[in-house]
Length: 295
Length: 321
Image (cartoon, rainbow over all chains, first blue to last red; front, side, top):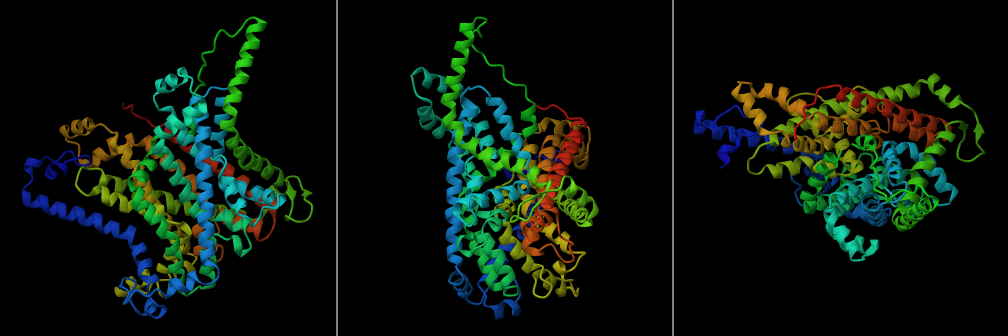
């Protein structure tokens, strides 16, 4: 069955019959070899960072970057984790990301449901306003947000880090609204005839039926929260509320040539995302394509 | 994608006989209020968020751009002075030029990489899903952490790149320390991170092109290359527009990688506009200038997005259902 496959999309002009078997299998080998070489480019930096993080400084500079560590040396991780509050920053990132994800998804579901399934005066106008804010570059709001947080004495608090991205995020609302609109209308009509309240319709119908898009939105929110850098960098200046990304950037300049340590720190940030990618790979690929198709 | 939605005509609502009588109008209004009351609890949290953290900040930044302020003393009204100053000091132009240079190193290569990967994977063979996942993987990485890893690999003394080059007898440069190579290297990191991500859009677009078109073309004797340029590429126009618009908007706002890899250096060679705005506001505490610069960036992005929409709308697109 694989034999028919080579004639698919990009080279439809080639017919199977004219192709001798040996040449065909050579083509397969070359094709998969190419794919593997490309994969090395995309995955290689992770592997090298992994090797580097498990080597003592002396080995890092004396062996090739792609040489396996002699013995998996964990000293870099213990040095990083138990010095200078790194564990605390890891906890801060986890906390802030969790708050951001829960808020963004729950308030997003509420708004998306209203925009998709309720009728109220000014709905479409309001939704246009939400969409228009998608055009505003992040950096435009950074300076005023900082002045607002100072005004309310919220700088150097967890609140300041996650609040701006928690209550209403137009992109998430847009994604979920599109999905909720595509759910069959007669189910909702039937529920209303039966006298179900809007709240009941939301919790019993919309949320179970919208599971895929809700998981997708949660993933988008999580990755955003975990990776967020510029805003936490600005709104926190004491170390107790610092997040992981900010502390990695600080380590990079503090230990400028101790690459074994900064690599270990970076790996701590990267591994949770790798795990999430491994678990939700299909969901993530689909969610990316979904955000493109909904244009 | 959002603009299309904005242009859509409003849905005409089927309302019960909208009264010509006063009583009818009152009833209509009453129903509207009741509907609003039902919807309000659902809308309110997000509305507070959008108003407080998106709309009010845009107004504030506009106001701040007419003041001179350092976050501490009371602000001074200076009219258009911040905007005038921008045209006089070349660091803003320089930052915009560096950003444009970065976008040029980023977008074309990244898009071609994404298209190439999509062509490779757009066939029905075993194991391609696995490779697709590996190519998308960098998209799921923390930019700050990955920038650290790439800084190490491009390090002039201990880096992998120069190590490899030395094996073939080439003495590699200090990549991030040279004004010639620092910016392309930073762009390369973004290309690496987002090529696989964009590939997914092109793959989705290619799968929507009817097979019959290719069959007809090969009967007419069109080569694979010709088919790509005459069928695949034109039919990918909507995907291309989406990818370019979102990528260019993102590319103009590059910050994390620059902050970690070069801190804007060497000699401002990588001081992109976002970095310039950040250091103007939070290192020089010149809030008014930073506000004026960020609004300028907003304007530039709007204009470029508009041009892209015009460019793609004027090109022939074939309706495929």
